[in-house]
Figure (cartoon, rainbow, N blue to C red):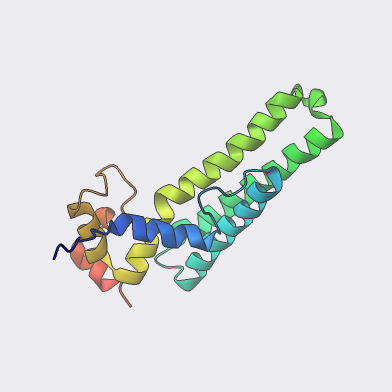
Amino acid sequence: MNYAVQVVDPRALWQARANRRIELAPGNPTDHATVIKRNEYVTATYAEMYLRNPAIYKWAGMAALTSAAVGRGMYMMRGLRQSRMGSLLGLFGREVAAISRTLGVGNLAVFADIYWQHLAYEQAGIDELERIYSAGALNRGSSNPGARSSRAGARATRR
């Protein structure tokens, strides 16, 4: 009998958990309303992580404030597009739409890069990040929260 062994990518599992938190799935709509709603989820997710442990997740508090500012920018671009007032700022319709898209894409890209790593650290500890790194699924240049502190220091911050 031939049994196939399924190899599970630990990074993909954590990324999937993070994506579920912001209701992101392949094929999600990319219309403006959905992108703004996703920004609200990203902002709330950062804020919740910060509030769970402000001493460890100061970055998440700053990320929540930044993500909220990005959301305000998207709302402003929407208002400019609907009112056709962008020209008063020297922006044409396609530029307003491009700025709005860029804000949404950038906000999601930052979330996709960092949140899953901190979620993995929070729920499974530094050993999980080391396992992901050992599997070749984490670059040295990534925002690895454990890479900035010693192993002993990271263990001391566990609950």
